[in-house]
Each structure stands twice: as C-alpha cells, then as structure tokens.
Amino acid sequence: MMGEAYQALNEQTAVDYARRLEGVFPEGAVLENREIGDGNLNLVFHIVDPASGRSVIIKQALPYARVVGESWPLTLDRARIEGDALQLHNQWAPGLVPKVFASDKEQALTVMEDLSDHIILRKGMIGRTRYPRLAEDMAVFLARTLFFSSEYALTPAEKKARVRQFINPEMCDITEKLVFTDPYYDAETNSFNPLIREEVESIWKNEGLKREVAQLKESFMGRAQALLHGDLHTGSIMVTAESTKVIDPEFAFYGPMGFDVGALWANFFLSYVSQEGHPGDAEEIRSYREWIRETAEAMWTGFESRFRTLWQEHVTDPMWTAPGFLDDVMHQVLQDAAGFAGCKMMRRVIGLAPVADLESIEDAAERAKAEKLALEVGKALVLRRRNLHSAEDVLRLVCSIASKQEVQA
Ligand code: SR1
Ligand code: MG
Image (tube, rainbow, N blue to C red):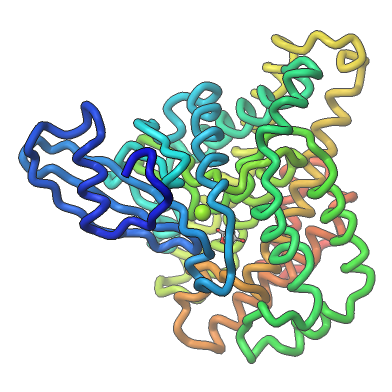
C-alpha cells in the first residue's frame, strides 16, 4: 500500500502494512492487531508480535471526524502536521514524546513507539493516581517546545518558514468553533446536561463574557508566537510513575503560547471540580485536590524558570533583551493561559466532545454540581485574568471557587 492511493486500514490491512515495514518485525512474524482508538478523530492500531515481543502503534487519519461520522469531512493533512510536529518535539524535548519509526503521507499515517505500558493521564487522574514526574516533565516540554519554535530562538526567516509549514486551517477551524464560538450561543453542535440549562443560558446572555472570549479568540487566530501542540488536554498525555509522553499533535499550528499552558490547566481544573462526583471519602478527595493544585502550580513555576533560562542562554536580538521585556512576555503568557483555560473548561461542559472526568459521573444531579463549578471557574478565569499575576493567584482563584469560597481577584 506504500505509494498507493489513500485507503483507510482495517485490522487485516494494518497487519499487512506492518509486515512490510523495514526492520520492525522479524520475517514471517505472526502479528496480532487490535484497533484501540478511543479519541474523536482517528484509527489507532496496536500491532504486536508475541514471539519477539516487538510492537508498534499505527495511527491513521480518517477523511472525516470519527466522533461525528462522514458528514464531517476532515483534512488528511493533519497526519503530515502530526508527523512533522512529532519530529520537532523529539528534537526539542527528547524522551517526552513517542519515537516515530515511519510516516506515510499518502496513507495519512504515522508508525510510532508502542506506549501501552503507559496510561492516558485523564484515566489515571480519574483513578486518583499521583504522577510525581508530571509537573516537571510538562514544564520542560512546554518551555522547550514553545521557546525553540518562537521568534526568540529562530531567525525571522526560519520562524516564517515554520509558520508556513504548520498552516493548519481545518484543525484550527474546529478549535475556533468548538472552543471559542459554539459554547456561547445555542449552536447545533452543543450538548449539555439538561440540569444546567439555566447556567448555560446565562452564559449565552453574558455579553461581557463574550467580549472577553472574542479577545481570546482573536489572539488564538492571529498571534503566531510559537508552534503549539494545539490540543494539550490530559487525553493527549500518557504517563507512568517514571515517564511522561505527549502524543497527538495533529492540531499543531503557530499560535499564542498561553494556549498550550491553558489547555493543560483547564484539564487539571476539570479533574479538580469533578472530584466530589467520584467515589471516595472527604480526606481522599481533599488530598487528591491538593495534589492537583500543587501540580498545576509547579508546572507553571517550572515552565517559567526554564523558559527564562533558555532566554538567557539563546536570545540574541537586541530588542528582545530590553530590560523588562521578558517579564512582559511571561506575564502575558500567564494571563493568556488563564483565559484560554477558562474557555477550554466551558467548552467541555457546553459543547461537542465532553471529557470523561465529568461524563463518568453517572448521577446527573451530581454531574450537574461539578459542571456548574466548571462553568463558574471557567467564567472567572476569563473575566478576572488581568488581575492574576502569578500561578499562585490562578490557583487561589480556581480552588476557592471550586471549594465554593468566593475570593476577590
Ligand atoms: C471533532 S473533534 C473534537 C475535539 O477532539 C479533539 O481532541 C479536540 O479537542 C477537538 O476539539
Ligand atoms: Mg487528540
């Protein structure tokens, strides 16, 4: 099939494809295969040779969004974007992304390292597992991928060439609609718990909120600051106690740095607000929430200090070295991250593509309590972001609302 016209794989043709990969499986290996994709968009095959113990993942883009079906056509170019982004991420953040063994543009697929000894972070967090390396690893990933792809590290010509390489209009269009538009009016794509209709309708009528979200949307669409992962939620991270791997950069494009930081924060905070909906005693809930709080804060602190170090080591443009400019950059990334986190929390409650942290709360009334908290925290992050000057401020605001103690920020 290599070099042939695109064809979606099935469990048999994926095995045939894997068998033809050079140097991956021994001649004549009897391969086992399972389609394990549970995301919104793609096919994912887990192919194993039990005799040699070798295994790979083949991820293939479908020409439509899997979660909706063929009525939502979607570019296959996202597989090229993902392959190119993984290659750069491997260079800038080695060890924090899966190894890529092959990319096939015609078949819109990537053959990569099997991470089945890891678990999707979202699932791990629903099970209240703590990951001691997570904050540090994500700080390194964010600092290095955002810094080295930016104007601060590249020449103007290199940066513009990268912007061109990662023009990703159809995937950005999904985010522009699902994150920044549809949740704010009665859109067809929306889907939410009927028990929170009053709260959702009040968001649709909140003109001040919509004005702020419009500003964030404009920044997402127009500020080509760094190569973003573009969809950095806890379903895009795989973990063990000792290892963190960032997967799935098919939404990668040049946008504002705060968007990736904010995506991760949003998903930590969605876990935080969902805690009381999952079984466990008060102490278990309190202490897991404390771990989320510490992780979210440490992730920012580690990110900022590494980014500042990279800046000292690599920045050469005399204007970027103007006293105070780096402080301005960090301050803006922090406030952007808070605003984007707010938008990303609200979209997961109101719009298409909810998250399991909330969806797996079976009792609709219990789920509604967590969803209302998510909306409150989301709104506050958007509306009060200009009053936030440190990660501590962000976490104080989030935790006080999520614990239902109002603070002035
Ligand atoms: C139709 S795609 C829905 C969502 O899934 C992806 O993970 C992105 O978050 C996207 O918005
Ligand atoms: Mg994904």
